[in-house]
Image (cartoon, rainbow, N blue to C red; front, side, top):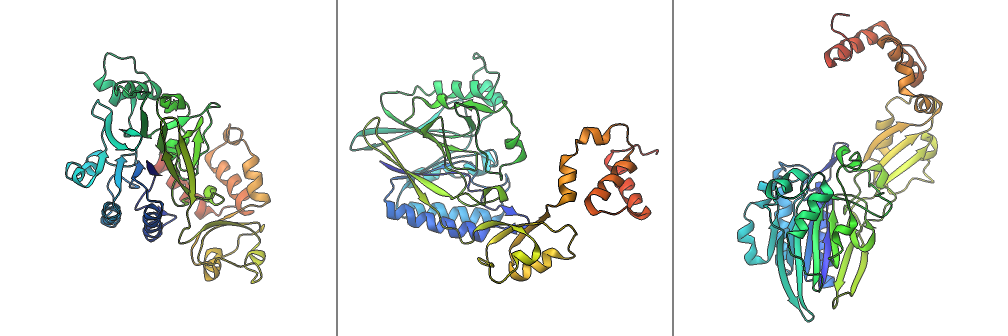
Length: 385
């Protein structure tokens, strides 16, 4: 049996106020062609279908079209929800879709969802575990000791009576850690994902009874613990930290029990996402300018702020997303310990020092008055001062 593993589509996402919907449409078209060329039997989507719990009409329309075209190939589709998805909205119409071999599991109801298909080697069991919190599993299993995410996932899997002698595949949308405990983040994950620490982490050995674990949640493609426990990653780059990534899709072939072959098929986006660093003159030199339609993150090394740098860059690179500076001023700021800066210093002193380091000049009285007003509204300083 041949399966395609997708995850973290984040349909409807915007990056720095640039809508990614047309780029997503392009890559989903590419994925459809790949599914047909590879003659896959099933497409797995491991959560975060949408970028927000209430997706736009445009996002819903694009996903609807994608699912419909998959059924026309035809392939089986198995789908779980992620932390960005709304359980109920994603689950709408799921019972009707079964007739088209589209299987949704968007909400954990106390049982591990299973769907079994046959091939020449016998049954393949697909288990669908949407994003769950410890409290959700504890609600259905009050008799079990569940104090964290790891225990919750283990209880949910144990309840599924997985037969390790058969071929088993699981879809899961969780923060799965390897032997070292470290997972490489893509950069475009939500701040909550980037700062979970040990709270949400589960061990990869949760999936020891599965021939393949199709994971979602982390945006950088990678295996965790063993080759068959794998994050597909996002199909598009959504952050400057992902500029150097080569996005791909795992195509997994299941032979007889114990035989698993994984091929990574490279994706070609409508536009690349790149980072440029240097002076304005260096970066806009006609001899080095290329890929002008790409999404661009710029780091300028000039010591002085360049007026309307964004406007200047967009004349050459119309899809410039962000411009930041890296110079003696920014390095000085980064080297300062914030706790030392704040100790025994007033708000005006802190703001004056920050402004001086950032722009090399003093704040005017008008600028300081505005900062004081904003700080009072935010509760940073006492309203009576």
